[in-house]
Image (cartoon, rainbow, N blue to C red; front, top):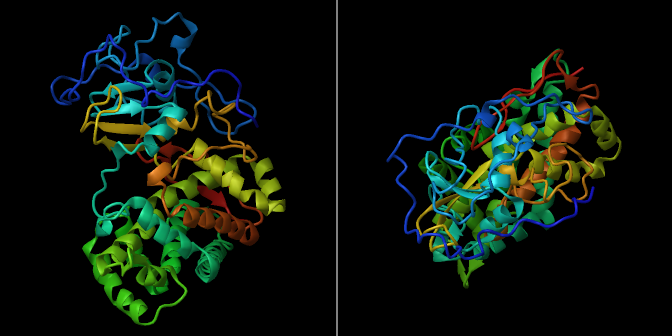
Length: 445
């Protein structure tokens, strides 16, 4: 479905502040005063869903029916809004249903400092995409990442990882994901009721990453625990994981194979092989990409399709459509709703050193970019591409996540042809920064 016509929002991050705005050197201290009262609209219940969706879809807050005051300049100083204190991500009710707040931010506060949250909020699709690709806004990871290893650049190390997903290594990865997915799906075949989150979504991504790196399947449980306590899609540092990987790195250096760990061990940067620390860090990045975020994304993907059995039936008959259905789920229900960046120099009204919160959850439902954005449409022709990053921060595990989703769905449909919701169950996404259903109760047969 083509996006609606009409003017697109200005890209706020690339324009200079307006002449009437004060010069800002630092954001206000987050603890200096009490958080402002939340807007009344964020706590109201959304009306009933439309006929095209089985899940509740939020509608614009009631303030849209009145004549609101003219929105302030997006570059006005924090607190200068004529409509009072801007809304906050920490307002009561936002975690349960953030979409009314996202709508308010896009329409009236497209660039605003959220004092209680301690970050500048960017909510429109065009601005979020620009922010994720802006070299002046960098990730602030917990440890080593692609951009911090060997003193090199993110793009250089990403270039080393990407070729490892081709040829024999890609074939081995695909076979490992497919095999693991069928093992997990068949375990559910005889059950009267099962929870897909606990028994499928949380395990498949980690097992896929373990298979990609050529690590022993017996270590999956330990790796799974490490992925959930110290790793994310940007990597990180986990001493126990490092100790676990070192013997395998030594073996791959002596006898490389077709797996991803071998590809990293034999890769060269500026004519030199990567150090053991760099290889371990990159392996951690891949394992992080196959961990919590992908598990959440897979849970939302299955929830969207089970909520729309007609679309699921089409995909069952035409598996080639799965990739588009996955991309649409990432647009509508990304696993990470908030992605943080830090400004290393001033960006418009954003001062150096400030934290910028890119609201993927708001950007993916921007009506200036997507027609009928709250509706899940597995056949949408252009679902965008934000959930696994953009520009120089694009996550190298995006392919791994897509393969996990595609082969995971195919395994479930083959092993559980009558898969459907358990009687009376409806998924309930939870979370503010990370968001997905915590439970998916289904009838396998």
